[in-house]
Image (cartoon, rainbow, N blue to C red; front, side, top):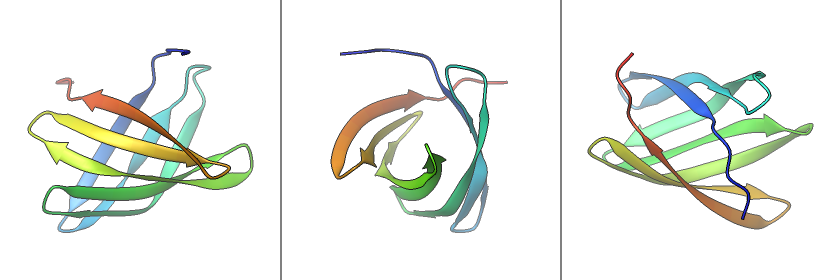
Length: 83
């Protein structure tokens, strides 16, 4: 399994979630259609010209997420880091 560093910068206003992600090559990608309700989170990012849905759960300082490419889910985890 390949591992690489990515970062997300989220902004939450009520249930609306916006922000960006920075890929391993340093490219910044906007987060679209972001929603956070309770501990459920969902958004899309543009990957290789297509919208890839991301869904998951927030648990304290950790997010357990899954992104879907071509119908195949790929789980990953994010941990909060103070700026």
